[in-house]
Image (cartoon, rainbow, N blue to C red; front, side, top):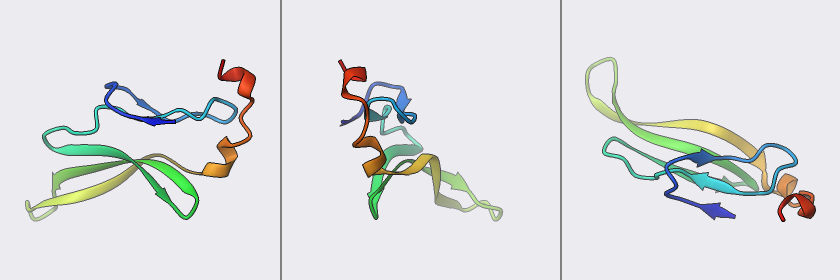
Length: 81
């Protein structure tokens, strides 16, 4: 499950239910999101930040992951309920 806007980011650890949350998502200078690419999922922050020349640039930072999505398919269902 992928959710958002709980003000707390969530990326499950191995063996935990597959619950992902991007937190608040949108802030004045950055956004957080879940990116799914090539069968992997990651929690990403895109942030406006100054470079060495003082110019504002958009920087991508991996906060958690990437992890294979299929790794979460075998989660013990009894842990979910």
